[in-house]
Image (cartoon, rainbow, N blue to C red):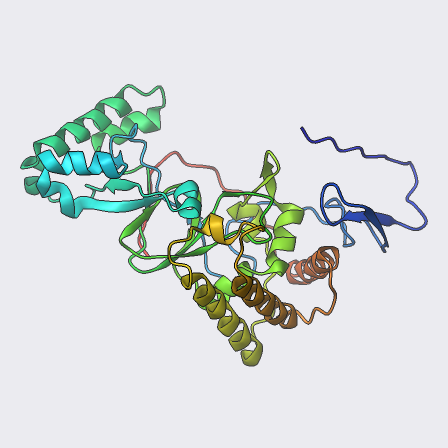
Length: 345
């Protein structure tokens, strides 16, 4: 259980003060500030709203992974996959790795029987696959949701399909608050991502570096939703509103890219460790800690930031957000549609 006690006054305080804690059981540090905004940081009075596209044009678009609505008929662990292939060996080419937040962070192996691209004549020669397709069709027809029932007409396809043709960046939707950085990373086109992760098909090492920095984590802690007390990373609020640094300085951009690669190299030195192992504060390898510290220095420099605390970082980010949004038109509101979307990148 989390309890927050907030006091309100009819008049603003003559000297606003924020009490900052290094951790939940730490001692408070009083910070005299100019203004306390709705996110309890020193910044302008702004409230973030849902944004359909990234605030900064240099940022890649992100989206959710695949949402099958299959009742689990297309998903397998290692043992289930082996048993299935023992009776349906022709199905082997149609299996792909399946990654959700848990699999991505903890290194679990799961598999998806992806038949969306399987030619119909091939599919009909695989009776066990046909049984799975029929089970999905019946499941969807029995749904109380009209859009789900409509999906029964194409039982080999997913409700949401987001299948990049090249490498893509993965951001878990939920991550432990114990971690200093949300673990993110690249996967290849042989893997299907679930809707429990966000994916960015065109993310470069520079984008990886910015998103894996303490600067970005300060923003996440300030504005993201929570599941229990864990971070819940959203596209429309957290990512699309993030104020990226000015991309004009090629030298600083190159420094971020080099530091980002050093983080990836430090991870690669531990091939048997999961991301949960690598980013546990008690087991994080010293070389990886050092690589992240170097990355933080490069990202801080790209913002011209010379402070030390997360509160100071968030104040800088809100100032940049205000500068970037002051000349933009209001975001239009679009109705949600209950139809399948398919993205190929």
